[in-house]
Image (cartoon, rainbow, N blue to C red; front, side, top):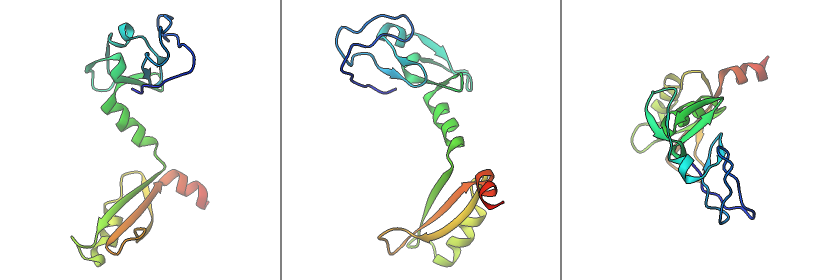
Length: 137
């Protein structure tokens, strides 16, 4: 849910009611600006089957999701992931092996490098495997 202000009065994406003051209708991802009465209506998450209020949900690819399931689904679409490793807690020699063996499922390790402006942090960069294969073939 995002609260946004606008210069004009918005209309509820569900019932069509107009705002009395600009910026009072919250934004629901995938739905649009909604009035509070429609926003407080219960909806069911299509992944976990939990019941949440509309203003604490989001729509993604036509599915109504609770915010935690929405964040999990969004993670699936991320093309690059960067994980950090601390040389103070483990030796540098094991970081490369760990970055390779603990790669997220569906991702290919691109690089392990020293973190920016750091003397002890290492970064492992991963890219979605299908994107990596498209670029390399």
